[in-house]
Length: 344
Image (cartoon, rainbow, N blue to C red; front, side):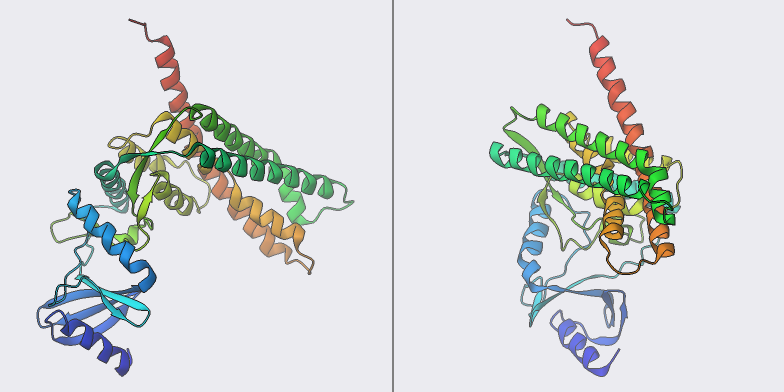
């Protein structure tokens, strides 16, 4: 760390009544060694700062305290403005995991369910906005269906397909199946909610990650990095996390189901929430982006790289499909049980 950065950190921690002995940068956080122990100093964009601090305060007021605490300065401020940046101070957690990596995921999802349970509330829904959302997504996905079909027809007209085109034609039926399923689920959600005037919203973490779930010395898990927090549907926390987790070689993603079971045990989705969740989870948007980029490229294509990227996105789609189908089977069993249950 250069001398100027060290001076800046020294002046910042002094506002907390601390004397800096040494500082080092670890990722996006400064680890400050002081006369009163080790602390984490974090910088964020000032534009996000006011919302971030107000949501943290709201969570505490609602009884949710599994947040790495943010210390006030000597004059009572919870963040220090310097130029276009805000700085805030937290205790340094070594993040010693209690058990295996799998256990951390389970703890994270259970704690996320608790966060959503504590902050859940029903909010009015604007019927016109919901209709616009449905029309926008359905139109976009159906257009992408048509575009993909044209790419297939274009490939099949070739006397000799490129390696990318050959792989695409081989897996096309599976991609198309994912598109159809997602669109049908979106239509189910639209039909189910047509008369609804309210929906559930929660305070979302906004940037859910293993790196943002830390353990203290007692093995208790705490969320950190609420800089993208806000009020939204609970699916906005789950979808990005799962999407990243599925970026591996194809496998029976049973541990993904275990994560979701840990979450749904404490915060079960309504039927309508599950329909929308499955719709967004199932839609193969990433694989379509690669395909569209390949066919729209007017320069010489690197076939090897495009084939590798298509293969990786196909694996991601198959991992997603495994979890989606397991959830779908579970939803169908619930419906069958409800149908067969004797009426009073």
